[in-house]
Amino acid sequence: MPGSITLLWTQIAEWLRKNAPLTFEKLNPPADDQALAELASELGTELPLDLVELLQNFNGSDDARGVTGKILLPPGYYMMDSSWIARDTRQRASIWGDAWRPTWIAFGSDLCGGCLVLDTQPQPRYGRIFEFNKVEGPFGSAWASLNDLLTEMLALLEGRAVGSVHRIPYNYPRAPDPLKAVVQNGELEWERGIGDWIPG
Image 1 (cartoon, one colour):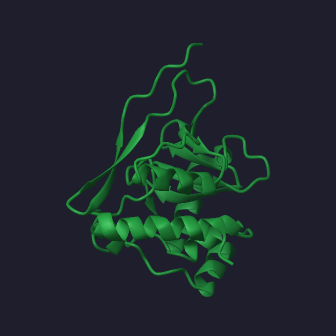
Image 2: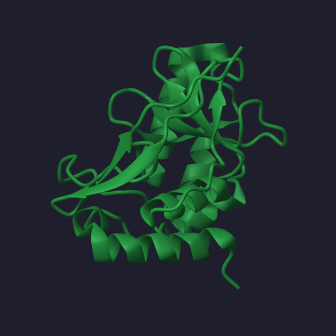
């Protein structure tokens, strides 16, 4: 029986097909067993089941035809394919050294040096999913799980609010910026609003 990741992604993909066809067309076919095995081997770790399930639905977005339509995940990232996940994660580990933890997997890119990270340790410090800024490190929005990220994405696409996101670092005095899904010329985009300041 399909897990919640598959159920959520099926609804997201259908929304994209109907409302953002350019973004939908950029989705790669599912990753096969060989691609997943190569990813696990290159990372030197067992892949988390939620990431495996997502990649089994689609192996990221096509990066061979320019950037138009690539941005997919909130708050503004494209989903890398399995080969780029391995390459990008290794590169960040070499650049950041001890500041990049061996349990971190970079799976989303903002095309400007930032990324979305999936933390595989049992009790992640920032959240299961979080933004990694190319200057600040872990900074921005975070979610308790990949399921939460996809749940919020689907809700935003449908014009609903979920509020499962939190801000990191935790002492940063500002709530996460509200997001709005916008489609222009068949391409999904994410517009950030202005978050509320949290009294210190």
